[in-house]
Image (tube, rainbow, N blue to C red; front, side, top):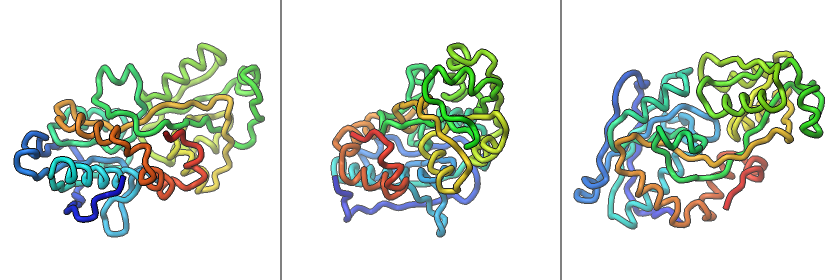
Length: 284
């Protein structure tokens, strides 16, 4: 699928950081009638996925997906899209990000990749899967290799798992504790920040799970980490909408129109995450 080059897609970045404001954009029905849509994209900076560029405009995998979606809307619905990008303040807890997006009004897209699980579907409005993401268990590179699950109980004995409270990885560590590591301690990060990765890796007997962006950060910064493949996970990922959104059906149709299988999408992934990381993903 090619982006329609003739479309007018306006990008704005709100320089003020998100506080307690409730966001609102155009409803899908209004956009169909007027052929114009003002959509709000809120985000937390994540390397590879979305960061503020040199000119202030966000760059990364997610903004490029949204640009492709604007092309889809222009071609199929005749709608010209204007995006307003607003960044969450640094170190905001991930649970607060989810809450703010979920409780926003129509026309709001949460550009935060989230693991899609049956539990989350009960409380959150998530997109269809965009890609299948591996999650990596990282420790210091001084930790012995885990050759099988039999090694877990002995070589990770006395470890502390660090995690953002309430997120997907907390549940996975609780399962690991119940299954193989009864003495596993679980401690919580104070905020959602990539510095959590380097801080954890530099601790003795510490571990954490990271998604593909976290693995990319650790690799690019040459952190002294080891990834234990025996405990690697694989989970579908998507973005989130407000509960009041009328855009989820349209966005999901865009994803399912062939976009996530397209050469265009694969190029977006490779350009932003790197070819070595691209090869780790399970793309369709």
